[in-house]
Length: 354
Image 1 (cartoon, one colour):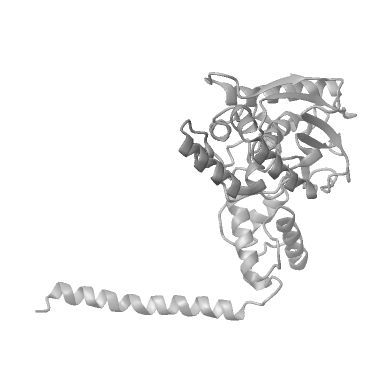
Image 2 (spheres, helix red, strand yellow):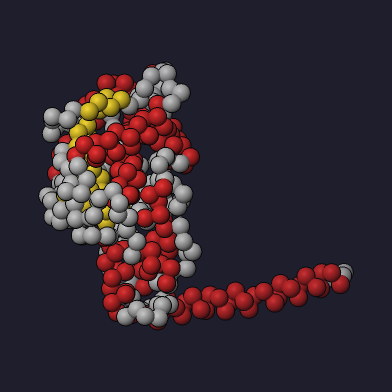
């Protein structure tokens, strides 16, 4: 027996089907009409006042530089890259080169490539944590062998660090920079070590050495690490992830072409920039939350941020739940050495994929 309610439900179902067919037809039509290469300008809303070709070419170069495009820039790749960029920038994910997106690309930022596949923290730490019983220990070791060198690029396997500021800037002396570095390291040290039975990291300044574990310096233009600075504004600094960076491991480079004097807008940002880049030195990738210190954009309004935020503290503590120098470096030194040698075939730039 057909009831009125069942008839009404049937009519509702019949009305929905044409919408699905129309949607699928539109998707197929867009896929069929999209060019195999290049970016169709008609696919994106460009704001008034921008030269379309120039804006698109500049956006493509930007997305390629910061890790969103690796191969050809066809319409599908570009749409995905723009959406991923908007996700990491914490702005509306329209998939279009709208005014907000283009303005964001103009902001001062960190030179480390973005990563929108966040996998650090407790989830990864749980995969490789050291267990006391032999069966779990063997299983954990086999898992690490399958992870390869790239996995280990996220951590330090030592606990006691020496550091030094190699040089100063004509607008910021070496001593002033040392004070800022010391304060920033203290922020990260407190976040990592607070409440732990033994300190996971310790830091000791060695001002007369150039071979310390952590090295801070001002550099200009091309400076030997395959990631040249771009002059005033743009990229303000970059740092290198641990383990895979060879001779550049532990280095933080600040763009020497910026006006770092204390009274300037960029100069007031120096402490924040150092605090941000130290997060990369310890293996943290960029955050897509604007409230985080590890947010990749270094707008001048962020100069008032003097302390790590909750997310930064949570991430770094999850990233180093143990003293890895006691667990991995001693018990699995042969595995670490084997993976480390694989990373020495090429010198990575800041933001190498991990």
